[in-house]
Image (cartoon, rainbow, N blue to C red; front, side, top):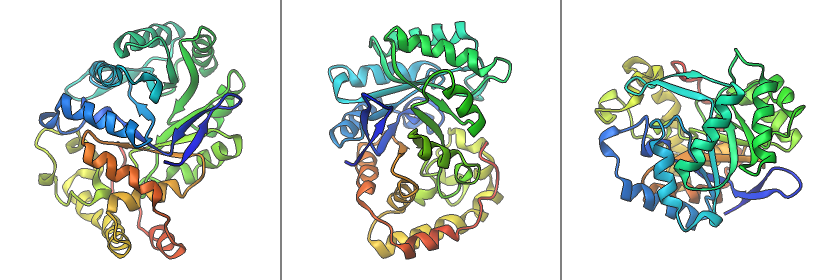
Length: 320
């Protein structure tokens, strides 16, 4: 597995394909969850060099961190453990949450995450969303205190602007920025966030590189989704948008067929082609899919492939 450096100085090497654990406990396919299989998926990821294991206290809420804690028991030193705080769930049934960037909240949230994960520190603690009611400098300063206390090794931001990255960086180094990036979500390329991260040596963690499974080519109608699944509420998965978005995924399939790989692997390879400091955080609870996703790091897209993918139409429907 190719790696990239998380942080500066005594940087930690992480695999360019990571494992997003959210769907094991939250958001997708509620009836298809199986703890034993999910734990196998985590172990398979670590075995293959997908060393960034990512969770958050929001997922569940809390249950995903507990699951990940059980999965990494006895293997803590083999992986880079990442979690997030700053989003508080109001209604698990509808996934409604609110932002809380108060210093006292982030401190208590981090300490609770450590207990659930069964560890004395996390390698990467991320602000899940910036709270517009709290100055970012105050939030980030409190998180920096967690680094000084040894509870956290590095800090990351999620879904932020270049201006917010710069404000945080003035207080404490930003090791990573996590934002959605895929063939149907290219905002970080247009708004300068990825370019800024590349220039400043900040790892860009691309979550949902498979478009929440859509770019793997498995969903043509809402009926193809599991009956109990949060994607039913996402605009891009509504019937009219889903039909229109086949114009996004069909060319991906064609590239995959020509290269003898899967559409998912093409999608991940495209994300990785956006820069050396990019990590594709591919979520799955299936060990076989973990292996498929990991293999994508060995796929080099040709200029012709990239030109075809650059010509894809914009997705119909918003991300949320």
